[in-house]
Length: 497
Image (tube, rainbow, N blue to C red; front, side):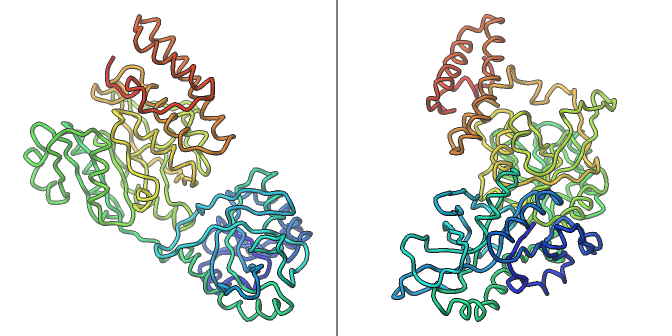
């Protein structure tokens, strides 16, 4: 959901060419918005014109929260610069709000926007103050960046637990001539916002995909996995098989026909699945990465279905798919808690590994932003990276069951190591170190305590006194709200004990 005070601030020609609806807050409040229903693409992106000022902004925000319940709201448009007359203004500069302010009330905004940005776009994070009347001269008591709607909207969306973002383009100096300056700058605002919103053009979605398949000693299963990629209805640009020091090496055992379709990267020493995935991702030449574990396979339309999904929801930078589970040759039904979810799934990712690597299609540049798979983790490395990813961006879900997951074989990581929750505790401690929001910290701490108590009782029951002591110490430190580094307790990432 995007909001703007005035339609003139938006590049409406571009938006409508892309097929996205633009409606007024009045029609939204009256529930008269046929353009949303008749959008030629999908109504997953909507632009709402709110009108100027506190009253209109609040009414619009209430209508949006009640009738549309958006995944996130991004306020766009011009802003004023509250500067000394001798300061040189940076008109037509684009800012992302770090917070909004109304009087003394301050509301923090996420500065990582929930959609892909043009690679060359750099925006300064600023605090935006919302005022009830136009500011017609410099006021030292007011912030340098002002507008007339963002803070009022933000306050409403905060009450409804809807994430709120704000992007502003400087349009005028706060002076008696600010209205004329604003009108003169409208074309610059529209041009800047069209660049920001370029991802909304369905034809601009890159369709080149690199598939990364890590493998260690799984010849038969690997061939099944690779065949499912070769047979995709949407052909991958490249298939990168990363041989994690197999014996014999993959290059010697793979048949000639299959070898014709893949690029093989051979690791001289075994590094584990994280190191193998990372090596493949770094070698990939495409804008999108699809991961596939060597014991899984895809249905024929997996990539096609995910790309079709993204054309209708281009704000997602990560999308997974539904799954079919096979255990010892038989299809099994999942319990309800394992059902996949879409959107802001961080809380679900704390509870369990809510994203399957083999079902993911992800923009490659995300790894440059959040980091790669953590190679120190013998297992649960996927749990750790999805915690990082889902904290700052929503995750899409294509409902087609295009991933077939096979379980029950002896070399599964989940069967190889005892007390797997140790690795998840390490991941949560790592997340806790990076987290500053008290509400998110409380959720992490609660889950760490829950898992540590299970680990402690299990170790005591099995007379594992060393691990039991370590789990008890970490639990005590976390309970006392003391800083604990995941690196200070090697037992958490030790393969065996």
